[in-house]
Length: 276
Length: 246
Image 1 (cartoon, one colour):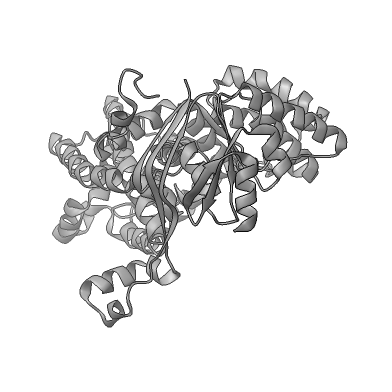
Image 2: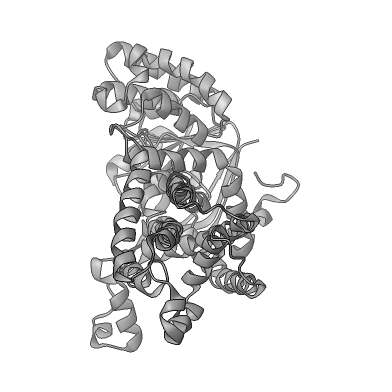
C-alpha cells in the first residue's frame, strides 16, 4: 500500500528502477503464493502416478547409474571414482539448466494471474526457482547413496556447498528473470535456449573430467560460467574447497548480470503483461 | 478511503504477428534487411485513449459501451493488472475483480487445495485459508466432493466453487464485468444475495454491463465508453439512451 502521507499523484511517479526493486521486495514478501505454486508444480507433474514426485529421484538414479557405468568404461575411469563425480555434477547441472529453461515460461505460464490482478512479476520467477530447488532436493539422495556405496565420506569442506548453492540461486534468479522477459517478448527464444543448453552440456565438465583432457579443456572450463557455478557446489561435496578466486569470479558475474538484468526488468516490467 | 484517480490514461497493445515476435526479424531489421521496408509487423491497438476518471469512496459507476469500447481494459487498469502505457493511474484501496472466476483453479487439485490456493492468492495466511475452507464448502454445497480432485466435478460444481472462493473476501474496490449468475435457480438466488452483500459493503463499485436493469439496480452514475475514450458521463438512463443511439 502507498504511504498515506504522500500526495496521491506524486506517489505514482516512482522511478522505473524503484518500481522494479519494489516488485522484487513484494514478490519475496508474498512467499506463501510462490511456495504453494512451486511445490504444486512438482506435485502436479506426477499426480496420479504411484511413485509420485519420487519419479524424479528414480529417473535421476537410472540416468546416473547407466551413463555412469557406460562413460566410466569409455573414459577408462574406475567406477568408484567416476560415478560419484558424475552423480553430484549431474544433479547440480539439472538444477542450473532447469531454472534457466523454465524461467522462459515464468510469465507466459502465469498469464491468467497477471491479467487479473497487480501481482509482483518477480513472484512468478521465484516460483520457478522453488520448483527446481524442490526437484533438486528430491535428486540429492542419488549422490548421497552413490557416495555412501563407494565408501566416500564427505569432509568438513562440504559445508562450503550451501554457499555455492546460494550463489547459484542468485544467478539463477537473474537468469530466469531475463529469460522470462525475453521469452515472453520473443517466442522463438525458448527453442534457441533449448539448443544452447544442449551444447552447453558438452562444453561444461559434467560428464568429463577436465584434468584428463589437457590444457585446451582447461581453457574451456576457465571461460565457462556454468562450469564455475557447477564447481562451487560440486567440488566441496567431493572434498575440494574452491579457491577464493572462484568465489570472487562468481560475485563478479553476479554483479555484471545484475547490472544487465535489473535495468532490463525496470524498463520492461510494466510491459510484460501486454506481451502475454 | 478507497479512491480511483486516472489522469490521461492510455493503454496501447502491441499485437505481434508471429513474424514480429521472432527474434530473427528483430535482428534482421536492425541489420537492415529488405524486410524493414515492408514496415514492421507490429500493429498497435489503442485500447484506452487518454482517459480521465475520478471515483471517490461511496460511488457506484456503471460502465456502458459496445463490445470493444475499452470497458474491460479500463477494469484491468483499475485492478492494477495493466499499468498504463501513458498517463497515470492511482488506485487506493484493496481491489478485487471478479473478471475471470476460474483463474488459477487447477483441476488436478482437490476442491480443498484449490480453496487454500485461491485464499492465499487473496492475501490470507495458511491458517486463515484453512478456516476459509469450511465456509466456502458450505456455500458452494460441495459436501464430500471437497476432498476429491476437481476433475471429478461437474461444470456447475466448478463454477459454484470458483464463485464461492472469489466472493469470500470483501474488497474496498469491487470490479465486475457483468454480474455472474451461477447455477440452478436456488443457487443463483444465493449467489445474487452474496453479490448484493459484497456490493453493499464495497466502498467503490465499477460495473460493466449491457443489462439496463442490472445497471439501474446497482449503480448511481454512468460512464459511456467508445473507442477507448470516455464519450460521456451522466445518469444511467441518459447514457443508456446515448449508447443505444450510437
